[in-house]
Each structure stands twice: as C-alpha cells, then as structure tokens.
Image (cartoon, rainbow, N blue to C red; front, side):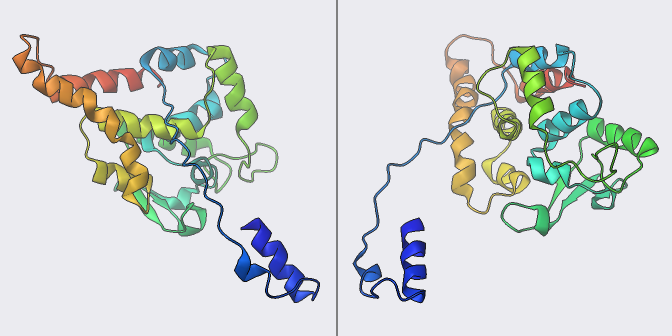
Length: 231
C-alpha cells in the first residue's frame, strides 16, 4: 500500500512511468495470530493492591474493565455523553474507532463512581488535566506505573477491553451481545473470544463425570466477586 502511494505520487509529479503501478503484485502476508491477553484473578488482586491504584487512574481503569470502552473513548468522554437516568453512555461517532456511535449500559458500581466524580468536577470532560481542565490525551505513564507496582508483564491498556470481553464470554454471555458492547463492525473480531467458552462447555458436560456441576449463577457470582475486588 505504501509503495503504491509513493508510485502514484511519482506519477502525479511526472517522475514515474504510468505503466509501473498496474504491474505491481500484492504481497501475501502471513496471518497474524490474534492476541488475547486478559487479567486473571491473581493479577486483578495485584492491581487492586498497587499503591498508585487510586484517584483518577483507578477510575479510568475501572471504566475500561466494567464497560469495555477503548482508551480514546474514555479519555474523550464528556458529562453530556452520560445518561444517568437510563444508565447509558453514548459513544459518539467521532470518538469511536470505526466511526459508528453506540450506547453502553453503565453497571451500578460505575454509575456510583461517575456520580461521585461529577460532584467535584470542574470540566466538561469526565477525566481531565487538573491544570488546563482539558481532556487527557495520554494515560500510558500512570498505567505502566500501576502495572510495575503490581508486577504484571506483557499487558497493554487495550487488554483491559479484552478482559471485559473475556469474562463476559466465560460467564455465558453470547458472542452477538459482546460484539454490540465492543462496537465491532465484523463479528469475526469478536469470535476471537469464542474459544474461551470451551470451559463453559466443559462444565456443561461435567454432569457425566460425577463432578459437581457449577451453575451459571455460581459462575456469574464468582466473576462479580473478582471484579468487585477492584472497587
């Protein structure tokens, strides 16, 4: 693609013959293995105990984990995008990666946190620079500091979104619902998480193994317990 752009510009400047571009053949690339990295229970506990896991940094991480929102969607979030009465967040098209707006339900713990933040907020943005009152544009340094204190390796902010999706799938939520929450245009992106439901299937067949069957309710309660550790 880059080579084509360069040659096309060369044609415009009359530096390259116009017969060059049609002769180019596409390069076949090896398919990249989809990376799904999410926090396990021990890592969640480690983060909850990190000294710098507090204040605005803590709230940004919580919003990512409980809603699956992307970093830019969180940092560009305005109070006008939040419908507290109906407990919904509006992700505007201009802040969405694929240019499509969507609504995300607000879990009760996050609703309470957002209401508390709003009480003392001095900006139209939910998360903002204390000096300029403008939105935050980067969260890399404080996030990496928390990971360092928690001794967590090979983890990126976007993996919080993977964590959100992974635990939903493992608790029995359908792929189609997860797709809508994540805002994926193509369900193929969401299908990466389908292999995580294998444990769910293993549990279903365990009735033939003379083992204790773990109900959906028990699994959901366990996952809720893990996430509540972070509040």
